Image (cartoon, rainbow, N blue to C red):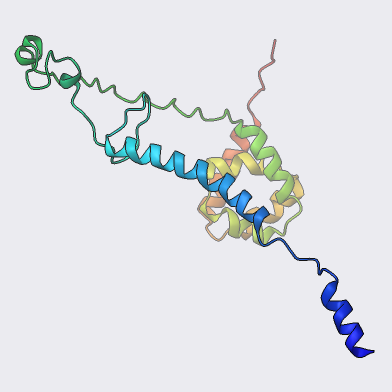
Length: 182
């Protein structure tokens, strides 16, 4: 019985796989156009084939005079007589960048804002911070501050001459009559 099974198996056809015909078709469809394009570009690169408008790096260039000659060896009279002149390069000076316009400032508004901040600080800290201020600038801020806070600040200033000058500046600035805006 086993002999019969073996003979039946030998008689039945086994399905055979196609060996790469589909892959061969795809490879051919891709490789043939690539080779054709590569060959064309290679011939153009070597100067064997002229393709208008195609400029590849390293491509052999032919002289322009050769294109206008009557024969391959003899350039025309015009090409002999005239020498090419280099193009004139006009160098223009760079325009100056527009001047940066400083924003308008209002010292009085700045003094008012700073006085609001200093009103909430300790008098000793204000004296330490304002040590580098010019007397006119410091007086402009002090005049905008609360009188009680200024009364705490002036005695702490170590230089009595500076404290006296600040007092005089506060007096002179406080006596200015504000202009009415029309």
